[in-house]
Image 1: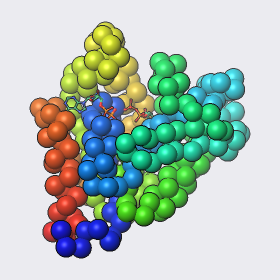
Image 2: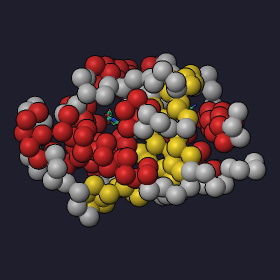
Image 3: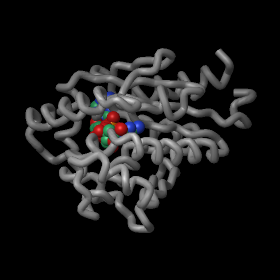
Length: 228
Ligand SMILES: Nc1ncnc2c1ncn2[C@@H]1O[C@H](COP(=O)(O)OP(=O)(O)O)[C@@H](O)[C@H]1O
Ligand SMILES: Nc1ccn([C@H]2C[C@H](O)[C@@H](COP(=O)(O)OP(=O)(O)O)O2)c(=O)n1
């Protein structure tokens, strides 16, 4: 790699839940010495704040009115990503079932998306060596000029099995249903829905191991850097 080190590289990784975005993005960023941003964690953090402050999640105008209030800070070291809201570490509470079941409604509100998108762009612009940003609308909306766009997919069965494994034996069928419902909500919202960018490389991870997916993405980044 003659010229790789100097140029910051921006990698966008999108896809539905359980396709391997977080694990792949973190590992690719660590291997290549890049920063890492989990944009889902930011939407979860603002959702946690809404829930904690008793905002009516059924009322988009109530959410919009306070969307600018919480201060969300993301630490972008892939070896130990962090997330705080108004200085409080929320890494654990943003993963509760309560937040997971409300996050699609909160993240569909345009004022929420505008706020979080601005934050994401400024984090990406400040990453000196480059960054891997994962989410749902990174390649289409947040960073349309990314150097490389990946869209991860996997069958609902594979995704549910992976997630229920994580949730220590949660029922696979219930997990699958919740997953499919959230995908439908995320894909059908008006403002920047979950979608594959026209110029994204689609990688179906159903039959691939995590190390295989990581190797595939690292190779694609290295090819980009080498100008292929
Ligand atoms: N290709 C794969 N094969 C098997 N398990 C995987 C694969 N990719 C990810 N996983 C596992 O599936 C779970 C969900 O992965 P994660 O990276 O959190 O997905 P996402 O960020 O897309 O929701 C994690 O436990 C992860 O270790
Ligand atoms: N760029 C993004 C990232 C996430 N979201 C929303 C929609 C998702 O259902 C939630 C949670 O995302 P997250 O990546 O944490 O979800 P999973 O880890 O895949 O379960 O946030 C979004 O609207 N736009």
